Length: 492
Image 1 (tube, rainbow, N blue to C red):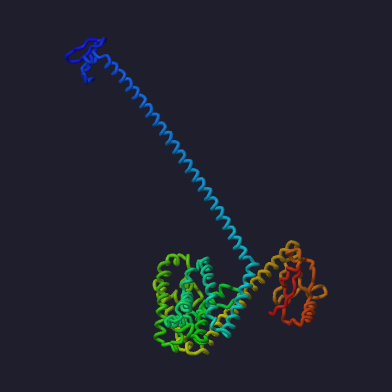
Image 2: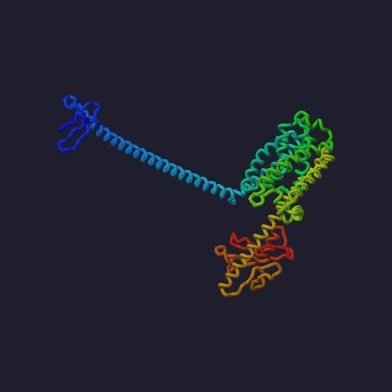
């Protein structure tokens, strides 16, 4: 190796020239002459190389560890998420099972509630409570009229929420926005919040003795003791005018409990109409906004029913016919105007007659209560009578079909069941009898088990003190349950 002193270049044994001046900050001569410096430099270079090598390896190892750590964390998070989702799915399944169990339980209870036995028991209980309510109200009216408003409040706190629940279940919720419920709530507010307010008393008296009481006649409320819904409707329309009449005419020391009554000895027609109309217009405005405007789509789609839509669709009612004669765009307006006119007209007797006379007030209450009794009697006689006639006719047709099938199989003709005015079957000796049924067969037996003759019927009738007129027919009765078809007399 040779050195060029001027340039600091060194010629290697292979003949290549290496310029060391650009690599070292000290002169090359010192490096060549100082063996210690050369040894230090060679050692330093080896340490640096080793450090660089191991640093790179360590850094690579750390990165691999970090990647493995991140992978493990991701997998753990995925497993935790999957576990959470699994738990959520299991929880959802448990919730669904619980809902299904509750639904089945409610279905079972509903079926049990509507079973024949429960319905009969419930109707008996409702009948009992209805009759006892009429009796207790009469006794309170005669013995302790100051407790009438308490009895009304107790019943209202039970019947009004029950009516809300039933109507909500049947999608009749908008019927609860009618004037009758507004008048009941207003009466309760007067009784327990503002008994000193003359404005509330006048408004309640006029509303309850006007449109509310006369609705028993217009809406045909019925005194049907076994029907809880009909009894609730009658209570809503009948009890408030009764309470206000008692407070006005029959309440002892009324000034202590209801001070406003003593300050009003006579109703001024204009003032009474103004007070009652203010509350009526308040109700009408709320009804128009909350029901006819905000819920218009549900009503038009048929999802909900209101008193307006009910009367409009009533093909047999006079109000429905009148509304259908008006254009659809003006029906609601005409209906509200008609209601307002009806409200004013029905209040006039209360203002001019009933408020001043206890006798006329008593006659008015008897009139509306008598209308409900008449409607209830019509329900019991006509509805149950028609239902019994339909069942009897169905049984007669079933009997005729069974008898026809029996004789068709035997090839002996097709006899028919005896009808009014048709000749009765006779035996060989001319004795008339009724065909009896085999208790173990649904068809008529060709060999009668028992013959009930006309003489036997006459004999039994004479023993029981009854008689059969000559114009009566012997009819096949539906006493199949005990194995015989009895004979029943029926006038033509």
